[in-house]
Image (cartoon, rainbow, N blue to C red; front, top):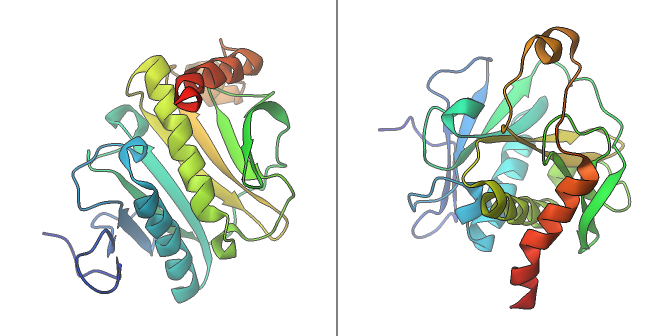
Length: 223
């Protein structure tokens, strides 16, 4: 029921991750990365091996097709997802989007050369950034991309503990200077100020968001 696959991983035996063309692309090239053959709804439900394969799929497709690739994730209808099965999209943009300087923020955790933080200028409650502690170029050739996706999934699990299965968006911002995974939960409704003036009213301070995420992680750390 899907178009012919562009990539399947692992390459031998039963597949775990598949990449297929998007049936309704908004751009000339747009692909869907199916995260698991298991019917799971969220990145939070993926196993580490599946997340590593997702990272590998992003890297391989970036090498296979020229241009600026923008990986993104939508979960929940309110966040723009049309399918409940966990998946990400790869979009080849005609030019890189405006690069945002990596925001400094309130640290949630640091692990394996990566840091998880809630930016001080968070636009929404629990906005979170996963990035290398020491800036490095080109996430799509980095060995830390898989571990970064695992950390992103861990944060989403903590978010589910705090808020339930909240809709969310996530995406990879990358340049020749640095990169970061951005988690953007959709717990608030944007109004005219946000949409028209791009001024975001966030009712949860990043310090409090980080403290709540750390507290949600505490039972896991205790085990």
